[in-house]
Image 1 (cartoon, helix red, strand yellow):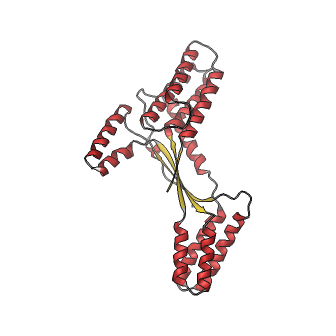
Image 2: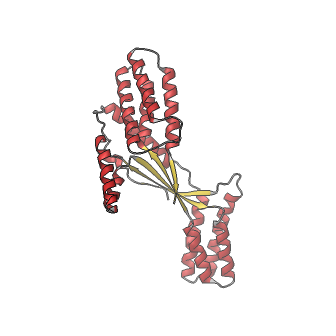
Image 3: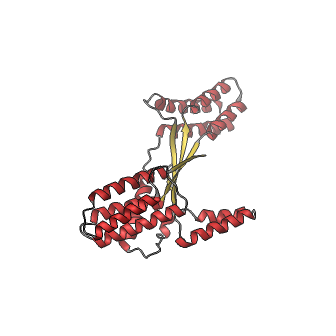
Length: 287
C-alpha cells in the first residue's frame, strides 16, 4: 500500500539569489532525496493492513448476502489485530499506508513578499480561490501523509459487527463496518525543505573545509540563503534558537574560515543547533 508520489524536485532545484554552483546544488538535492527516502522507510504494520483488507472483504460479502463469509472475514480481521494487541507497548495508531509529496518553491526570493501582499488583497476582496492558488505556491516542504488504524477502537467495532450479524441485523453490521473503515486517521508530517538543505550544506562544509575552503564557504552562503527562505516562507520552530542566531553563527564560521582558524567546535555546535531547530520546526497535523 506504500506509495511514493513524484516529487516536484524532478522539475529542478530552486536557484538562489546568487547562482549556486553544481556541487552546492547537488548537496541540496541529495539532502531532500535522503529525507524522502527516510520517510519512505516508515514501517507499516502488516497485520493492520490485512485487518483492513478482511474488513473490506466482509462488507463486500454482506452486499452479496454472504453472511457466513462476512463473519469469517471479520474474525480473521480481529485475529490479525490480536497479534498486535498482545505485543508489548502496542501503539495507539498503526500505520497502514504512506504517501510522500514534495512541494518546492520555484519563484524568486524577492517575489515572496509581493505574492503574500497580493494574496492578502485577494482575501480582503473575498476572492479566496485566487488567494489560495497563490498561497499554495508559497510552499517548500515535504509532506508525509500516514494513514493509521486506531487500535483502541477498531477491534471493538468489528466485534460489534459480528454481534449484529449473529442477531440477524445485517444493516446495522454494515453500518458499523463502514464506520470502522471511516475511523482511519491521517497524520500529515510537514518538513521544511530549506531547513533540510541548510543542515546538509553545513555538514558538508564541515567535511571539506580543510581541503577546499572556497567550496565550504559556498556551502555556508547557500545555507544562509536557505534559512532566509525558510523564514520568509513562514516556517517556525519551537526551538530556543532563532533564525537570527543561526545566521550569526554561520557568519562567525565564515570569518574564522577566512582567517584560517580552527572551526571544528564551531561546526559541531552549529550542526547541533540546526538539527534541533529543524526537528522542532516539523509539524504534525491530524485529519
